[in-house]
Length: 152
Image 1: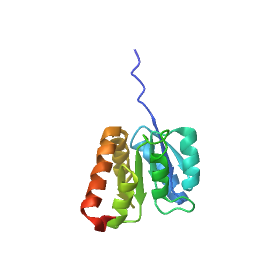
Image 2: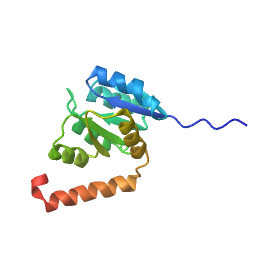
Image 3: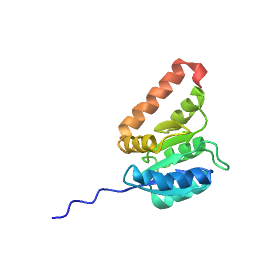
């Protein structure tokens, strides 16, 4: 009897840096059962997401057209894509930027540069976040902002 084939996950990487998307497309499969598809900007990412329904998305923040924060909010606002795990991977390293990303609905916020093994672990973790956990996290962030108006 043959061993079962491991499940493969489609990861949509949305970043306007072609060298980075190429590196991720080549490197991520070495660290997990990932098939990587890329998009060059937020609009293309939104379109490809609707077509592919990926298992997870990795998004840059600073992109032309639709930035990563806007893309996260658009995806979370659509019942068809609201369940997709979203990871922001960005050069924006300020605490306020991270708060904005997570408050927008991202499951994780990682700063560039990131090791492929670290990104792979983040994707694997994001794949196992339940809708209830995601909602609890959003409520906690909203309560934190309410308690600390400087976060808003």
